[in-house]
Image (cartoon, rainbow, N blue to C red; front, top):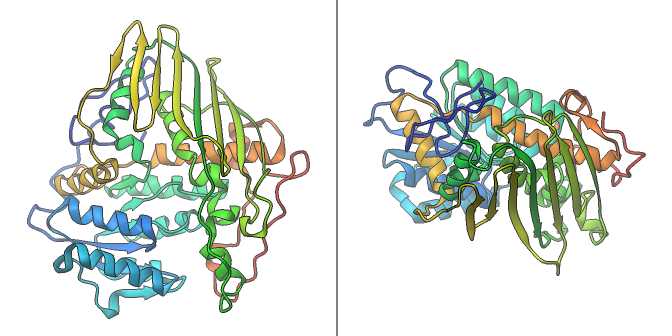
Length: 432
């Protein structure tokens, strides 16, 4: 099992099953030897994917360590790259050392960033590209910050599992974008859940209900692929659908509460009621999912993106001796046998990710989030598969499905023609 290392607190809890608990600590020590980089060595970071999330990740990398410099940027769109460069230069011009030779544009920009001499890759492209780009970075011996989700389909999941294993073998840090694992209040709740403070878990329900998302109107000089790439989250072959791209955070917290044990079965429903225009591609606007675990526990997940509807971002854990409740950003508490409320400090979880990533590189105990980031992403893909097909799907069938949503990674070019599959119809659409 891959170990996660939390530099703030290295205690770990062991459940009866023997699974390492990821709570107030994400970790047990791996025992790597001397530091990979001395405290005096400058760490060169390269950003692949220069949108808002990528720019934020690069800024957090700069804030995490005074001897981090940004030396390369890559994106398929030049305006995105230049926007990121301008924003980062305004933050700290002395540590943004990206000359013309290290500004890479195009579908091969990721490889050019990797090959430019960087030590750390910040991987924040749309999810469809993540499995192959992560594989390339690990093969090249780079430490990686990898945004969530890590894939859009089962073939991609299997690639990421292989890359994560190789990262561990090569002593490379791999930190995921599942930011709630780095959120102090959430760590406080889940460490207690995993320590048995609510007893044996019987049900978990998670909600991620919100409004719609941004869109970019088609421009006269855009071809079809440009239009889809500019609105990538509305095309399931690029985003995985919104249950994978966004609501996966809720499924990650469900998995966290269960000690990252995977369920056995998944049944789901979903559809699109208000996303009926062409701009919305082929994704749904609501899902409802049930997971069945080996011990009889049930996990329920509900999500929607519909304008004018109420918002909710919660986690409810019901155990034999109490319950845990999270209302993200507002309330973190346990009730029952062990009453508790989080009253500690709150820090930026996005920044904590990078603080712990770079500290682990410095001290020679690289974090590897590979196992949980892949399993949590698979949960979301599995839920989508069950909803799209209308079938109850086993874990084995979900993991081993050979159905790929999009083109082969190496076939991407601006001349490529790729049409969306029709909106999924339960009972008709095949996912295995």
